[in-house]
Image 1: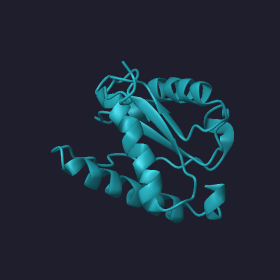
Image 2 (image 1 turned 90 degrees about the vertical axis):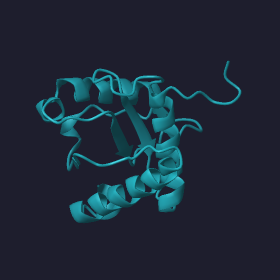
Image 3 (image 1 turned 135 degrees about the vertical axis):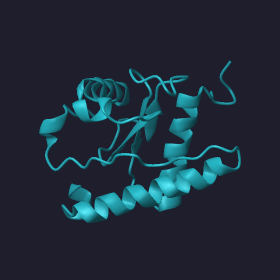
Amino acid sequence: YIAYGRNISAVVLRAIEIFSHVDMLYQSINVRVVIVYSLTWTTRQEISFSSVPNTLLRLFREYHTTTTAFKSITHDSTQLITGINLDGNTVGIAYVGTMCNFDSSVGLTQDTRGSVASVATIAAHEMGHTFGMNHDDDS
């Protein structure tokens, strides 16, 4: 929000562009990605923030599972796009194999403010983890 000049319309447009690209990436395996709800925080009061990826993922999961808006909308996964510069080389993180599990199907992607395609690739990668996909070198 801050990185986009406190312009909610710009933030929403960026999210739509990112997830439209994610949808395009997943169409080749007959999976569609559709935004069913969008929330833009204008203050940090909604959630405690951390630059530690695992901590931020846990905090977002806790927020997701306790927020009425998420409970009232049918959805398979919830993704946080953040402008926070995550520690280390991490630009995204998600729980593995949790798709369609309300309590844990969450992931987060750092908006590096690069191209839509580059941020969408990160988001698609993290969604792949929620589908249960591991890295090629993981056992």
